[in-house]
Image 1 (cartoon, rainbow, N blue to C red):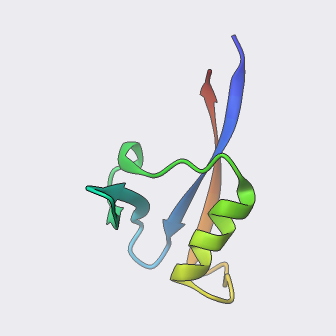
Image 2: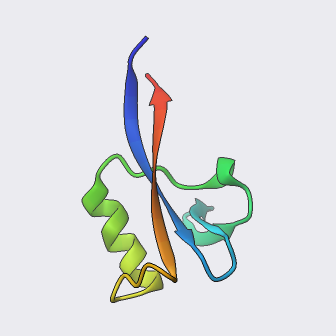
Length: 68
């Protein structure tokens, strides 16, 4: 079995995860609803929307290994 690394963006002030529903960006409590980015750069760009300075107290990017 092989795996692919994906990145998930989390807002640490309320613990929600960045996701998309009906084409709109939203924040979800459930990790399963979180948007998976295949590129770290994409995840960083979206994290900057939460905190332009990427202050580690406000945003986190988690690597997730998913089977392919």
